[in-house]
Length: 92
Ligand SMILES: [Zn+2]
Image (cartoon, rainbow, N blue to C red; front, side, top):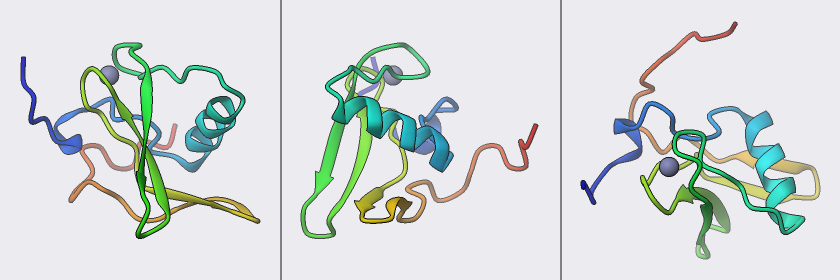
């Protein structure tokens, strides 16, 4: 059971798109569980208070979304957490 998985190692890292993050954030704020896309375990919200950003992290497999913030204009992705995307150009 690996315990040092990095997001880049996980092909199903959640919410690579802003749309997915918006949905997950809305569900989370409504008090609904947000399941990991890979294993269905709940995602926890990680907070970087210094930067004022959040991300979702799976409590089981450690898959993590990108960091984002939530302001008056909605969510903004604050940059990828992965050094390189595993799959680029999947636009279909
Ligand atoms: Zn997971």
